[in-house]
Structure formats: structure tokens, C-alpha cells
Image 1 (cartoon, one colour):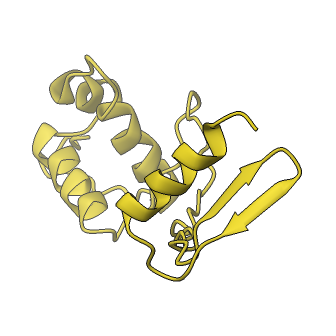
Image 2: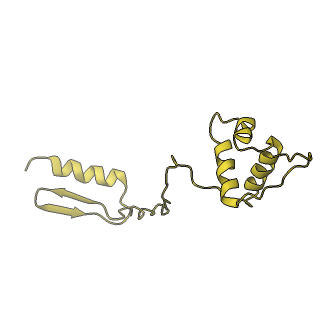
Image 3: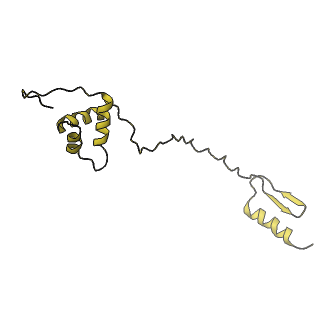
Length: 120
């Protein structure tokens, strides 16, 4: 605003109004010069307000179309208990269970299975 004497009048803008104008200038497809002109500001003045907002010194209002997000906390995965290796193999045929010694070899297990497979 310019007085008749040619000196500019310094208006005081409330922080809420500044923040609203800055928010408007940050909308998609908004042009800084057009927003400044619409509010009777110099573009450089609005640019300074935008810088102040980026520095966190001017709190922006939430946009009208803002989407709220909820915090999500993810617990670390729970380790599965290790699978215990069977040290004592068992061979079950019908109602009979044959428990072999700890660490029985594959050859020993195969021999017992062959004997169990022979019909009586």
C-alpha cells in the first residue's frame, strides 16, 4: 500500500494470516506472484514468509484436504525356535516303535527298515 506522499505503509500481518497466505502459495499450480498480488503483497515479501515457514518459524495450518496418518510400530520378528535334530531315530511300524542308538548311521537305519518290511 502506498500513501500519497510516496512512502509505503507497513502493515502488520498476524502470524495466522501469514501462515494461511504461505499455505495458499504452496498449493499445487499456485503461482507466488499471483498469490502475493491477490493479498496486496510484494512477491519478495511472500518469498521471505515462505523461507520463514521452511525454517519452522511460521507454523503452517493443516491443508483442508490433508490426510491424517497413524503411527505404525513393527515389532522385530520373533526368532523361531531351532529345530532339534533327532539324535535317536525312531522307526514305527504299526504298534511297534524301534528306537535306535544316538547317531545311528544311515546304513544301520536302512538295514532295520529292510527287516521290518519283510512279511512275517
